[in-house]
Image (tube, rainbow over all chains, first blue to last red; front, side, top):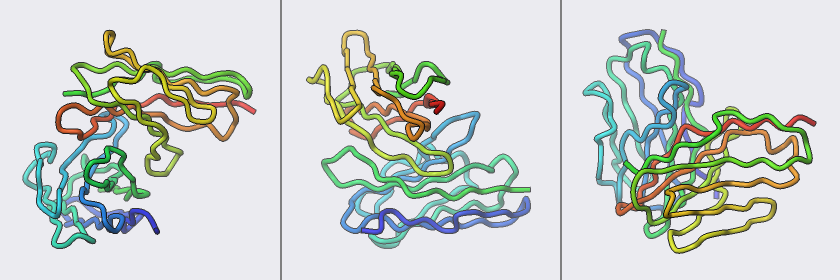
Length: 113
Length: 110
């Protein structure tokens, strides 16, 4: 298996622009997680899905952030409009139901100027 | 929150020495996991220990869990330069969704 795939790997954008991050989980996995990692706040869980349904989005920082999972093999995290404080590494992870181990993608390094 | 907190924040040792990292959490857990993150990469699962276990081994890794103290430790024996990475604990409670700590940054000097 190719593992969790994220794109793009790097994104540089200007404040106010829309940013879309993409994730393909491991085939057959039931859970998908979006995390944000910064030096200041560590690894934060933003939202997670079970069978394509959002279960807990309490970690989404504000309305500028939205996430979708239209099917079992694809998810997006969108920031609109982006701000410099959104600069971070965003990770997607997936896991099987009944197993707590999460498999992380390589991350998207976002820089908002 | 089940959040784990690792200690120390940073650890620097020589190759061949043992490295010990600690993790504390706040409430009852079902299991606790340890992950490694190499620079610029995603997290990789190392080992999971359940609440009814006290010790677990995997290669050069030894994990202990003390539920009475709400703490866990990760021991890496005979460390290598390739062990240089950040190490995270992740505690899972009733929801089985792990909550990650801030990590311990380990540097192993050749």
